Image (cartoon, rainbow, N blue to C red; front, side, top):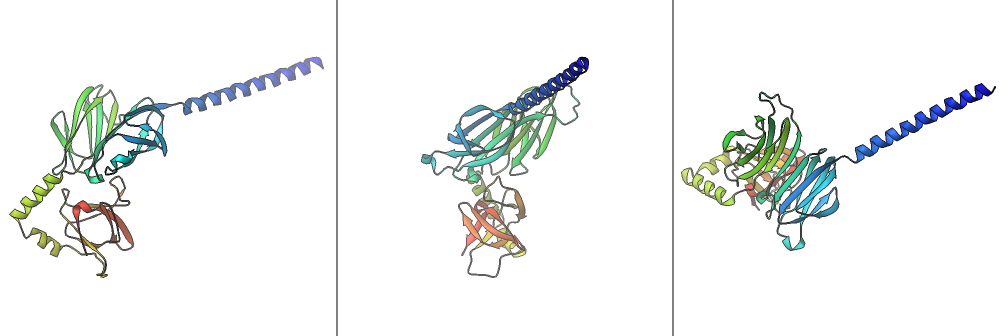
Length: 302
């Protein structure tokens, strides 16, 4: 009987050891996952309070290790800068990589500008060994992309086979201020660049004036030929879409430039104003559908 009892005890001991080792292994993996970090760097002009997933984590310039994953960032200027717009956006932090936000806040969304850069593994096939990539998207869409002063194309745009090292990325669209940033290209890595341009009101006013001088009837003819989806309720304000650099105006789900695009409307089209907010109006762009447009490119009438 004694050998059998000893054998049972040994089996039980082995089972306990296996369970303990398994528990330690699971805890190690969980803790390792929880402790995976990347670096988040934020700069802004003017300096702002930084909210990371609704928690105030400090002020710009901000440079800290942050847990990997998607985060919501909100930048709010101090109370003395009430004329300055706030900014909110999403960014993904990757393990061991830098995620960078730069915002220049104007008095509204359309006069604000900035960049968001993240670094991920490259996904293009490289013809050149050890090269990296840059993916560029812009607001507004269709801006011209320059790399080291060479014109590369129109955003959104993927640039592959970029030699390792420091390069100059520049974005330009007529009627907007140019944005230029230095970027560092690493082997088999992709720099994801999301760049917002600020409107150059002086340049756009001059372009509109020059266009009116060359073709004074164009605005009237456009309005006559365009559809007019405004409702018959003449007691409400109406809004007429003006000329834009892209030839259309985006309708957004919320009154800010980071909101998703719901539709596009064309210069000359007229709509009923459903609701007004600073720099934005809500319009019924289709049956049962409403969205927001920037008043920078619209004329509101009683």
